[in-house]
Amino acid sequence: MAIIKCNFCNRFYDDEKSNACPHCQRNLGATFDSTPDYSENNKTEYYEESESFFVEQKTEAYDENVQDEDKTIGIYFAENDRDPVTGWLIAVSGDETGKSFEVHMSRNFVGREKLSDIAVCADLKVVRKNHFSIIYDEKSNAFFVKSGEGSVSKNGVVVNDAAPLEENDVLEFGSNTYVFVPYCKGDRKW
Image 1 (spheres, helix red, strand yellow):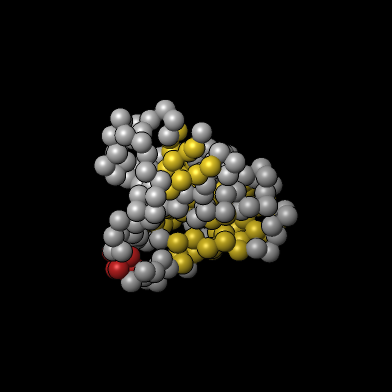
Image 2 (spheres, one colour):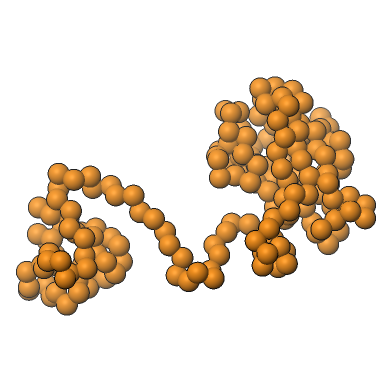
């Protein structure tokens, strides 16, 4: 038995069951009646069963100009590849005491996962992806806190939907307490 990776759709299939990719029906000219070609000229990759079946897949952009990011920021900043800091969350109690976390343009998801906009990795009481979010609205130059999968309270009151976030507001979530410090306020904005 040999596992083959199709060069067209990047899926794996068993060459003993199919001579062509059963997913996209292509194998560089091979038909269901022909024998698979594993030569150097064939563009499919050949894997023996003894090798690791789970090969790390890497996603590549179709075009160099395509940017695939989860976060939407202003056109000016996107064109210049910048996402400026608009404020900070500063831990004032708990295991994270003394650490600061940057708040950027638009919506910032707070979570334990390293890829979160605001990653609080050490706090196991924080939901992995979307504990809650902090939103900076560029038009109104204002901040908001929005509930997510976890519990967050602002100045001792649980946030159930979205609430305005002001300077020195205290946010409690997970095992820590944080103070919000805005950079963008009044006439100061990007």
